[in-house]
Image (cartoon, rainbow, N blue to C red; front, side, top):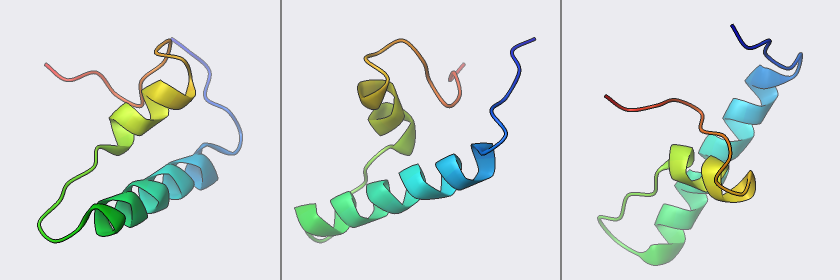
Amino acid sequence: MQKLPSDICQRLISIADKALYEAKHRGRNQVVSANEMWAEKEGGKQWLYKSC
């Protein structure tokens, strides 16, 4: 099991906030995945969660 960083809550809130504002920037009825933004930030090495 992977150990979570001590600031994981703040990181999750921050990336979700960035995804929200990116969706707003793109216009009406847009969706931005915080998971994909996180993976891009981490160079595709790490995901917030893995989908089934």
